[in-house]
Length: 113
Image (tube, one colour):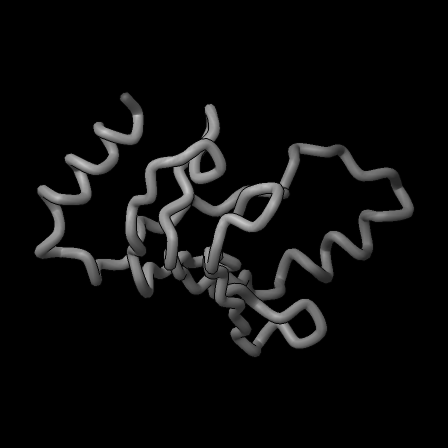
């Protein structure tokens, strides 16, 4: 039933297959913490620094093909054969450099994709 719903949405939107997947909202790690007296100097120095937006971006490369079978779906997700996406993120060692990885579902294997 879930597979049919997903497949109908894919077929309806097949003309726009190359659209990028929506970007997620950034996760804010700036909690409202009260610093100790030791941290006041560091927080004043950091307060003047410019903020960099560290959004991650998911980009759809290939939608893949829907395969009906036990290993190609579970309660949480559907795994289309050949699905390929690219995730862009800021490099941890050099935050000014953008890095990315490509995720692809190649086959179901013995335990599933």
